[in-house]
Image (cartoon, rainbow, N blue to C red; front, side, top):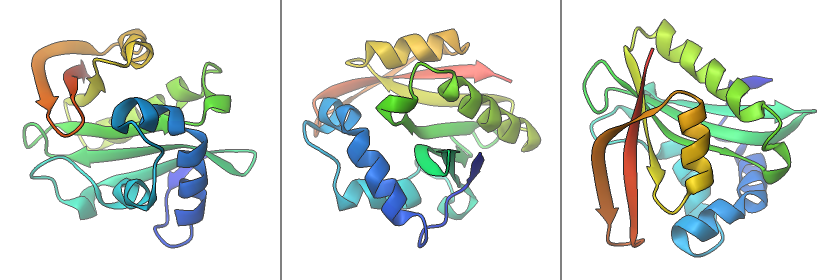
Length: 160
């Protein structure tokens, strides 16, 4: 089941999921996720986007939160959609759940009449890059180096 996350009721489940998925945070931040990363799931978004218009989604398997996604509208261009985060618990990976979660997200993007969906992938995450390529995302040629984390991210796009 995929549904909107409730910032009050689902916060403990998000914290538990991020702890289970800490391999990504170790790669990205060099440390396990903490309260700030849980808060980011409910508040973060790309520049210029209205956080109130963003969708914070949860993928529930057998009643347990096994994935989260943050979908925003208005970046990089006003009509575009941007997937700022999509992360699955390790036990839910490589079973088709990521593709199903993405299909739901894409249907939401189409319903909003956004012509394309953007995201960024860490250069240090070849497994993530391979997943996005299998899902039809292509490089845009836009990359960004983050001095705080030391990582380069590459922007990808999928026309819908």
